[in-house]
Length: 232
Image (cartoon, rainbow, N blue to C red; front, side, top):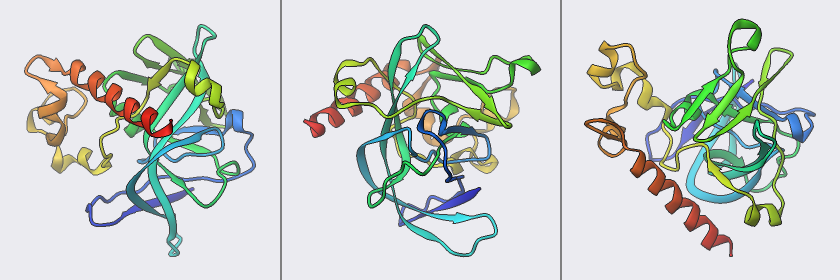
């Protein structure tokens, strides 16, 4: 598995996985707990770029691989009711100058769970889990293949981009996995048995009573609207 570090003046560090291989697009989407940054592959299509760039580097590999950008990508997946849904992934890594069909998409469990409207249960059913991703009213089955957690999906068509319901999977705000480092956690979050809250997210994403769902929903709609206007 390959890993990456951020490159630029944003002072964002960390590593993430990025694999490649002859995977068919329907199964080229891996949910990886060892990956700290989502990476687009053959079962996605590019929607928009940001100004951020990343450098990829393999475990034990001293050669950095440049040319990767952070952007928004999307894929079509079928929910547990059989309905096709457009899944939008913000803050994923990809390349402009090469086709991604020979790469597998990697979803970071940490980045997925950063979306407080999303519940990820990637524990096998045989071990008492549900093997499911739940986002709002939609649920998507996960599959296991040779020990890997697979989230099935495929690239969307132009018509589907217009017609299908859209669900935002990952936060559009710049992703920094280091915010979950122990030394960056809010003291109260570390002292009780709950998912940690990073200081940088408390003001906007939380109210004194819990999650600020209105902010999250408004922010997701705003970003999708901007992307849609840019694509017209």
